[in-house]
Length: 102
Image 1: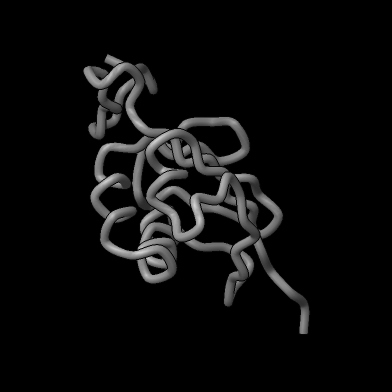
Image 2: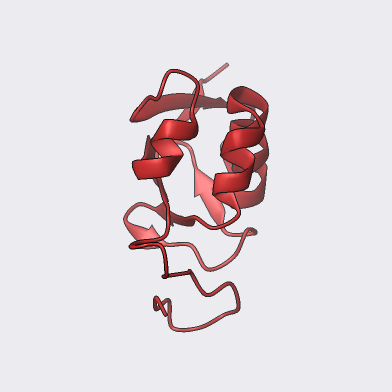
């Protein structure tokens, strides 16, 4: 049986919301790929409600490309970054766009 995992990087308030205020961790997967939504569920189960509230406003990047949907696929071996809004007033557009900040 092969082992599947991804690396998750946490920035700013996302890092502060993790148990132990970690900047990165390896997350084991039960399958060779998962959705962004499933990853968020795993992270909430691991780190709790504080991270859940932060994730609602965070951008997620997979292999240094911003995810546009919670249904985007993350593959084993990928690097995923959890990036909170910048300067408090910026928000990631959740509808399909050209991937821009507004």
